[in-house]
Image (cartoon, rainbow, N blue to C red; front, side, top):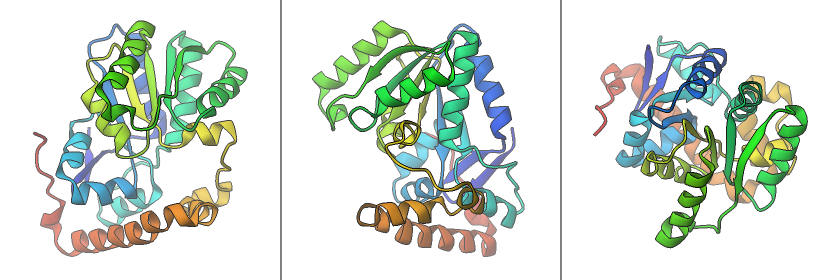
Length: 258
């Protein structure tokens, strides 16, 4: 599969339809290993630029898709065009639809208190055949407490889910998945704040803003105190990295994973 290289990231040139089809097949087959899927956006580029360990996690993932439109635009500027955006929330919903049709089981991990339960209810109402293997909202920071982390792993082991949706935020979700690929799931994917969006805890940007690639501006207006640094400083860094790669093509060389 062709890949787009941007600073320290690599992104697979795959559409959302192809992504859903690929993961549908994975969830139908006997488990060979846990497939780690990452939904990459401009924030990922910012973190990967400063954290080689995070960049390595992304490179080692089984599939890396372009969640953010800025990455799609950057790929076109750099003449390595991606087929389109693979929005993380849309992908989560589509995979739940597939799971309902194929009788796969889904495990919800993380999110704000109550958000996973609410999102599961919405999705089960939308897809009546959806089987929820478990809903787990552990204490904040559980991943840094071995005993709590082991309890979460034990619950997933017992549930034996096909798909695990991990809402621990970036980069925690990606690190956690990479460290727990021994768990008996076929697919694990970090889904950011998708539980809150599907549950209606947070309002998603209007469709026009989504198509314009301005969801970040909507989120910034909704939560300026929490997100100003991520978007204003992060987007500036993204622009700098794009210009650097446009004028110095060698900066597109991404080291191999270790």
